[in-house]
Length: 292
Image (tube, rainbow, N blue to C red):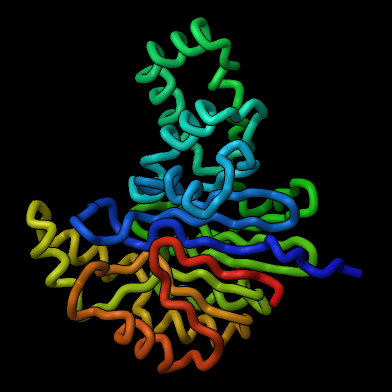
């Protein structure tokens, strides 16, 4: 029989903004922390992820796995800085990294860009090889990932124009957490998330998209079309959660975010059209305990 989840099992939403921009006083781009089954897992590495982990009271040296759901910059921009900062903070054993194959190119170029500093610290401070601290493998939806007590499964979702974009399901010690990744409304996600303790799902409020596009200022109608084609309206997020019968729903990766019209009450009202269970309207730093 499964052992009960330990009290240190939790999800923390480190950055809850959809998209790579950062505005004064607003939230940071997407990153999440999952502590489950004795593993410290990072899901997506938007700007500020290392500081977000530290603010949760979690030592960067404890990271064991990193997942990048797809290669939009708000999900992997700070992968290199996170690894470098963890290394500078004492990381001395490899981290297992799972991502679309293009992340390997990013990592190679990051190491080259930081070569002066890395070589200097190795020679001057006796640090280990940073390159050797990453064990990278592609996400393969046909092949579950197992590490210790944790099993991870991936489901391709719908996030055009990116083909390799995934939802992730983490299971250990009788608990399950599902991250939608960035996706348009995708009914098969309900079966993938069936019975999970927590579904962390992205959300857009369609009524706020035109204001967001105007605020960005250096994009055109193609951004508007992308947002509508590649993300899930909050009402449909509630629909997925209800169909999946999850224990709780957390809204994440808000588009728009930092919009004075689209308040937390608006997000809640949208999700509540179909979802009547426990609901977390995400914000940076929100920590959700598992196993209560």
